[in-house]
Length: 264
Image (cartoon, rainbow, N blue to C red; front, side, top):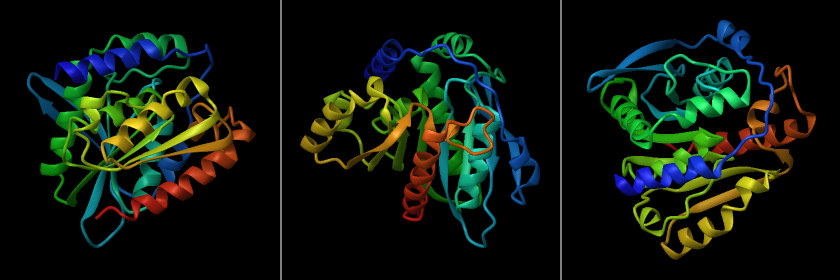
C-alpha cells in the first residue's frame, strides 16, 4: 500500500497543466443512445461512491472496463465515451472521484484532483473493481481498466495493485517507473500517446526498459501530430475540436476496439 501511495504522490507532483478552458460535451450521444445507462451507489466503508454504468446490447455476459476520468471530473464527455465502449460490447463503469464536481478550467480541476489522497484513489478503484466483479450479474468476470490524462497514470499504476485485471489501456498518462511495482503486474499494458506531449512521453522509455526486463507486455503507440488529451479534443462534436487530434483519435479508437475484442 505504501509503495502504491508513494507512486501516486510522485505522479501528482510530476504532472502539471497549462491553463486552458474546457467546454463539456457528449449529452447528445447519451440522450440518443439505445443502450441502458444508470447511476449506481457503491458502498466502501462509511462512504458511498457514485458510478456511471453503461451496458452493451448483447445476449451473453460481457467483460467490464473500469473507466478512470481525466482531471475535469466525471464529465458528459467521459460518460459518452462509456457509451461508446458499451457500443463495442463491454460494460463500462466510471466511478466519480470528485463527488459530482466538474470543471471548465484546468487550474480548478488540478486543485480538486490534487486534494485527493493516494489512499482515497486506491479505495475508489478497489471498491469499483469489487463491484464490477461481484455486483454486476451481466458481467463475465473479466475486468480491464482504462484511464485518461492523470487517470492514465493511475490505470498503469493500478495494474500493480490488482491481479484481477486482464488489460490496462493508458491514455497519455505518465508511465510506471517502479521496478517493484512492475514485477507485480499480471496483465498487458497498452499505451496511447500524442506525439506533441513530451512531458508524458519522456516517461515511456524507462517503463519499456523495466517492463521488458520483468517479462511484462507493454505496447506504447505514439500518434503522429497529436497533443495531450487527443481522445477528447479529437472528437468531432467537441466545441474545441482540434483537427490535428482528430486523426489520432480515430486511429486510437480503431486500435482500442480491436483490443477490446480480445476480452472475454
